[in-house]
Amino acid sequence: MHLSKKCSVFKVVLSALLIVALLQLIYLSFLSRFHGKQQRYRYSELFGGSAAKKNAHPEKNTRKERLRYSLSTGGIFDNSGQYRVYKNLIKSDFTTNQKPGSHSNSDILTLATHTTINNLHHLESLLERWQNPLSVAIFAHGEDVKFATALVYALSFFCPQIQALVDFHLVCLSGETAGFPEQDQEHFVGLEDCASVFSRLETHRDKYQNYAISGNISYPNNLLRNVARGGTESSYILVIDIDMMPSADLHQQFLGMILRRPPANEEVFVLPAFEIRHARKIPSTKAELVQLYQVGEVRPFYEELCPRCQAPTNYSQWVNSHVRETGALEVAYTLNWVDPWEPFYIGARIVPLYDENFKQYGFNRISQACELHVAGYRFSVLSSAFVVHRGFKIQGEFHAKKEEENKQNRVLFRSFKEGLKTKYPSSTRRC
Image 1: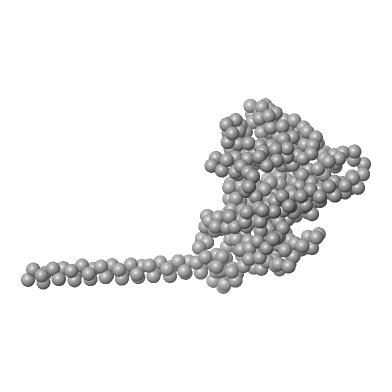
Image 2: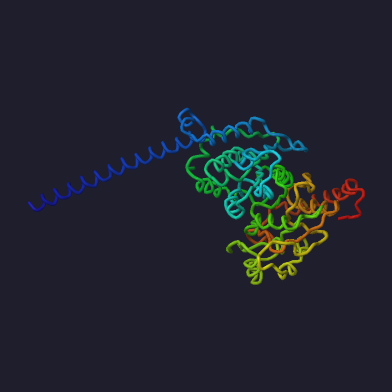
């Protein structure tokens, strides 16, 4: 009798467990179908279908059609014929709505930058700091051409601030073409909002070590800088690498400065460049930066790799230079260029372009600074603006061919300097 009761209780418990397990399976099946349906809806919303066209916002359909058109042109070849350029692959609302010949305060200064897909995740924090028009040139090769096209479209679709302010340009090898990514559904699985797109980009962040791109492909940094520069109609442009961060409120401060003090002809405005330990938060103001600088958590950019390349900035003078109580930006002091200075600066859109023969590592920025000097430019160092690179640059973190590339570009730089004598025959300045 006692044993029979125990068996009955066991059967009841077992039946209850089976019912719970069955309900869980039904629930999981429902979730799976719901998620799949949601993903299909998201994919349909991104790429069309009759139902999606009826329900989609008109501006998102327009964005889709603009991308189709940009890709249908096939891009243009660069001067060397080695690269294909899709200029304005995706335009921001700011650029699209801009009337020809008109200028607003927001359009006075644009930040131009360049990257491969593995560093595009930096765009999130860069835009959060900058909050003004931004032009991004992306280099992609092989399968990354599809991935880059798909992900920048997803960014422009899901991220309102990117829709509003960021123009994307794509550069690939001349033998490669970018296509509308509607057949690449695998790239969009799990993408539901802006955060999920940046999470996907994070998975690609360590794909390459600096310039070590698969297939022994050269990274055309100066071409990319020119493409990003050419993608804006702003009066002034700040060109930096995507893993660098400008000081807070730079856009508004610079606008205020040039209204008080119109720039001279042939003048660029230097932002002292620093690098910070990875664990540290990027400083917003000069006061915050100087505090970190004094305890060794921030140091001059490239201090370990090439201290001479930034030394002419005169960091000691800048750190100790007076900043107005109002916090207004101004010129602290003005310098002539000296070899081998490669400053980051804000310049008018008419300053000479970067020489696109320089690729990979070495002499790509110094060559342009050298040309500015020969062309008669002066370098005015700003009192409280700066740029900071995330992480210390250290020996041993670069790709294996760094020194070989540096030697090749040194030979190219000698030839480049000779060419400047012909380009600027009346100039007495030399590099």
